[in-house]
Length: 122
Image (cartoon, rainbow, N blue to C red):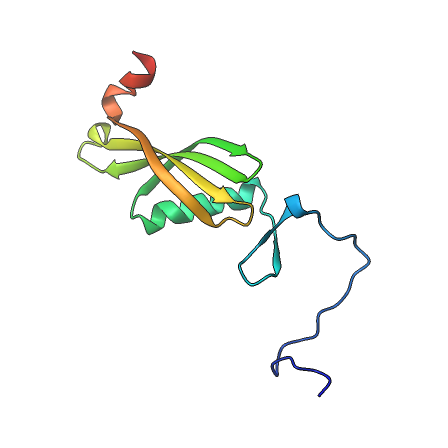
């Protein structure tokens, strides 16, 4: 009657480390806390999202840490063409929570690679 864990689940070890603050962890819905991700881990999540959307990762345009999580701005090839100077490149903004879960994303703009980003520069 003492231990109600599933067989094969090791007991949790206590460490001498201080507990994390609420800003360094996030809930996963079942009351447990998960470790907040760092910038490199968030970048990997954003690349994975591009793959999931069947978009070719081009470059990271921006990475910003906010109070609620992360905002990633990334350039992806939305429509590959031949020659590659005519590819349609899109800029997406992706919002992630502290644990790297997707909160939302949107396309900010798109342009033909060889023409540049005229909306931004011209």
